[in-house]
Image (tube, rainbow, N blue to C red; front, side, top):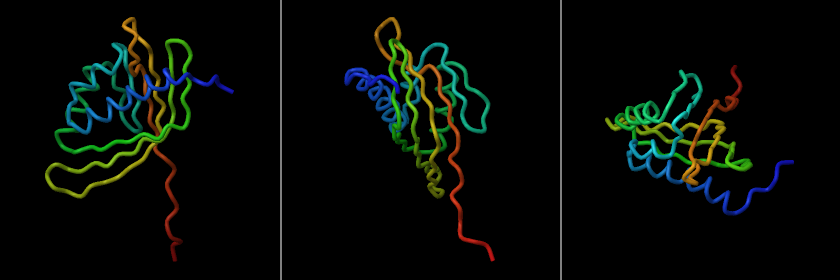
Length: 141
């Protein structure tokens, strides 16, 4: 069983996530770079890896130019050990095309790894997402 993180550690991890969600909701992709380590890497489901804060901000900028994105994250587990923390859970998004198309909602598993920098701030260092299993539909005749 993993050690129970302190309230202070949990608040620091939650603050990074809250800042990310707020920046995305505001369409402020530039603010995301400050939440990432210099060696950040994310493996998004079905996509090429994204390396570094500039590439991540550029990818989000392109997405935010086309869509209004509302995110939420349901943490299932948070582990903190020294300068490192990881959080796994379910990320939910509603993506609405800015040109007036139909909104789509999706959910996926996410594993987020944070590292505390020399300045004492935790930032995302790695991330990985994976789609949830398909929910069974009605039986086919």
